[in-house]
Image 1 (cartoon, rainbow, N blue to C red):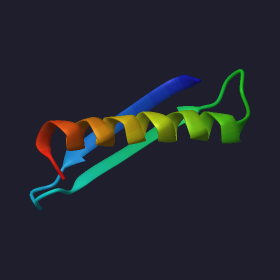
Image 2: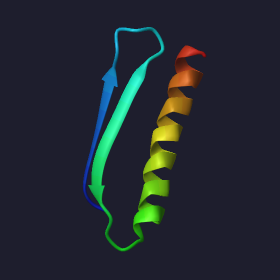
Image 3: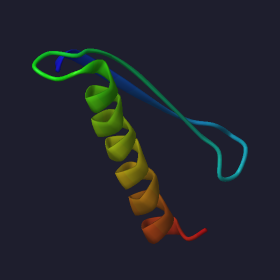
Image 4: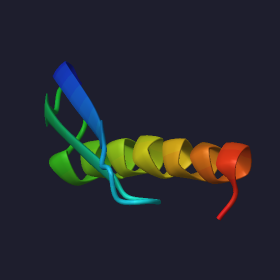
Length: 54
């Protein structure tokens, strides 16, 4: 992927995280690139849950 930008916005509402990003797939299909980005987001959310509870 080229030109990856990810933003995390921790809202003032308890337990709310807004996570967005933009990327340009390179060397893989768009659907494969989306799966990679979704995996990154999920790993981050799983880690937050592990650190701070559900």
